[in-house]
Length: 158
Image 1 (cartoon, one colour):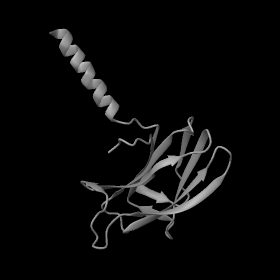
Image 2 (cartoon, rainbow, N blue to C red; image 1 turned 90 degrees about the vertical axis):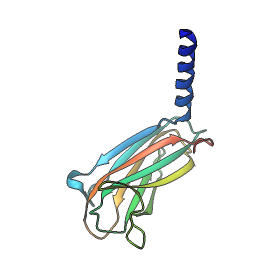
Image 3 (spheres, rainbow, N blue to C red; image 1 turned 180 degrees about the vertical axis):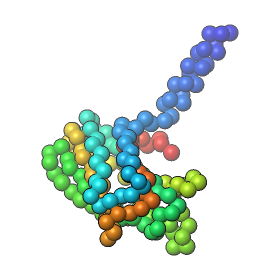
Image 4 (cartoon, rainbow, N blue to C red; image 1 turned 30 degrees about the horizontal axis):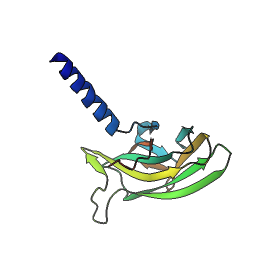
């Protein structure tokens, strides 16, 4: 009877482990004093070893409920292993037109995410992603942190 329970437990453990995708890369940059100054440019260095796979990228920004704006423009710069550069602007919506929080709110913290799914990277090596805040003020208050997570793309992922 003990052997059946042990085998059943191992089976359930393997089943649950196979259902979740572990991140290939995960890093969070925490802003000092909850302020994002224009001179602060968080970098994320992602090592890609397999160019046959596709990846999901998630950029997550956390603010407090005292954040003063309805959005935040950021520039995402990319440096590829073969030294190609690109720079793209992205708008992160913080509130809707009525002032309601768009992200996941827990207490006084609101989490906002941008998803880039099913992305294929052409070269093996290190990709350097750099974020810059792109508003007219030199310092934005009430920004806690920004993070990047990279996972392998899966058709079965919910």
